[in-house]
Image: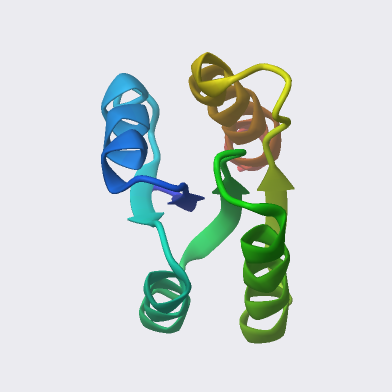
Length: 113
């Protein structure tokens, strides 16, 4: 079973594009682009391993979502993309986070078996 990552971004199609570009990774991708959708995903998918938030959302929205995520799922890490790298930096950022946070852990666990 693949780890589940919740991608949060300003526009729904951006999240879909990221997931398509990274479909070679052993990850199950979920997406959300507003408060209600984030809550729905967190409540309906207990296997979410981490959250990655793009830089396109306004600061007050990002802050609100961080609070919601922390309250509903204090067991998962939240990763915020920087704004300086622009929209083209989202895919490399997501790939780095997943490689460091999920895939390296998964690899270590399999090696220990």
